[in-house]
Image 1 (cartoon, helix red, strand yellow):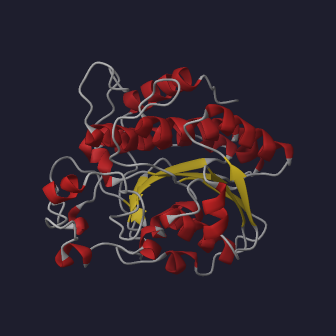
Image 2 (cartoon, rainbow, N blue to C red; image 1 turned 120 degrees about the vertical axis):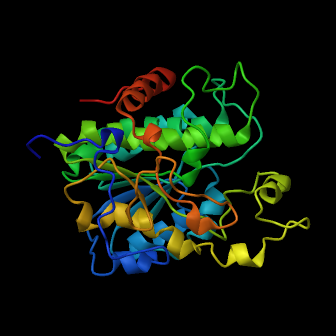
Length: 341
């Protein structure tokens, strides 16, 4: 790919394009008419929730899919019966396991057309990996940064790869705290930890796209929507959902809230759109939602947690050029992994 690539620094390209899809569109709607025969995808967290739906959609379209998993038994059970799926051991909080998976993949000599950085944890108690890094940052961002860098040669070989970071509206909960990303000098607040990890997903996509576009590698981040039927909030205290107006005192979700949530097929739609849509052929680094490019939120959108349809828009701090470059340098320092040329 030649010519000057326009980066989405500071939200320069952050404008909806009228894709024709919307809040209730499903993964099947997006993939209709798209043939992935001969393509290879890798989906982290591909054995549960919207990751599993993403894998199923890719397979139906003809792709071969690699699914790294920490729990191989669970992955084998959930992916049973799916053809062209390879399950491999990997833990995003274990750098050595990321290296082993990448070495194994690169040894095949195959290109990697689609890298879906989907796995994530949310609203967990304070936990740290062996390096002392806070678990939401380590899992949601640093592990995926490490994996992407190690798989870079295979992404370049695809001559038209896409990297998709499954972020969240949760990025609005916190900008990235460069002074204390691991909560060593401040009280731990799980929403702040989650928020900064999702902001990192967006900043990573912006800078990755800028660096990768001349090699044919485009990157995107996205909010899948508030999705019912996933395991993402399994570690969150019930009181948090009640505090946000989502559940009653018995821990049951309010019917009026449930009616506005997406199902898993709808939750995977934006991932599929970012990974495969020809509408994004000449654009990258953007944050997407509802299978379209999201609008910038400069504080003019009213958000209500008990109305998931209002949780949209992207904050400019998560697309900021200075922040994107600063996070890239910090991520290289914290992982010890440099992106190859």
